[in-house]
Length: 416
Image 1 (cartoon, rainbow, N blue to C red):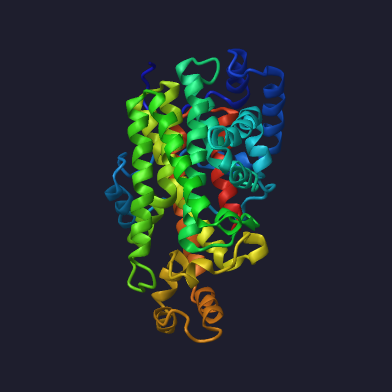
Image 2: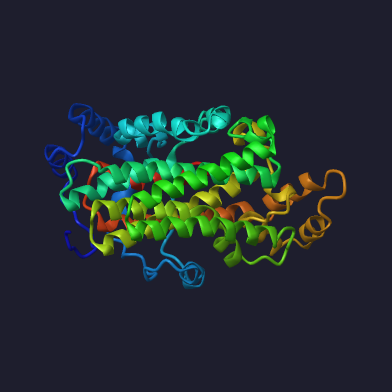
């Protein structure tokens, strides 16, 4: 195992990337060299914003996995915010972000349906609906990107079986949580398609989700890495904690921002943080680096959740793939609402009445927009993005690190 101190390493982009491939880090060298060139070219303007941030001090929050640290970030404040509008650059696309790990994702896609359907043919139709619904595969892509970004530090020439199995486990856990979320929320649409419980009934949906949780736990145990087993097991516990917290605070206009962030950590950021740290663990890098990868995933996950909550107010049902304002109508108060409630007492009355009056939901949405709730939530997302960018400074320059940085910027562009 290689021991290193987490600091900013500036080896130079071209040399580092091609030295990485010269050591045999990919099973398809010609594809990857082309991918690196294409990605570096398409992302050159994005690097201007990232390079400007190289001199920023490392994350001021001490590295720890406890929710208490998560809450302390709110009180301590944050470094200067990213300002995407001041930078002239092309939008970042997921296609370009994932090009570097396209072969890895293709293999994963081929395995996912068979994992669910092989032992349980009755769930095959549900599995096809689950994994064929146009998901971004962001979490397994992060596993592969962090795996390859950290592999150089440990001298790995190729990803291990453990890396690939971790990506499958993470996507199964994520998908199982979505199925159960849709049942709990009685959602009819997911990613623009009918949900599993809408098509096959609640019984099949619950069984499909349960099976994927159980199957992922079985694969996890067979990895025989106690650190990762504990890490992912905690995520499944966090899911339950997040659902309990959400259910106990519906229509609660006294919900604090810290409580919202903790719930968001449990429901979203915990899995992403486990994905990125687990990938680094299987690369065999120093614990300082694995912890920074955890912090990166945590802050990226929180930023993604806040952005999703903003989009719930700013996009149409067609764009969202589900009804707009669905969280609010169900009493799930998110960052834009929490901020708006500080300025508009009428919003509290509407929410506490549980939208009993005709047109009250639309009125509440307009109040959130007019009271600055959207803008303040956007700033919160940028704060978490700043922290995520800082967490990557312990990695040497490479196309994979650049893609991880651009993942942060891509998320912010969704509300730009």
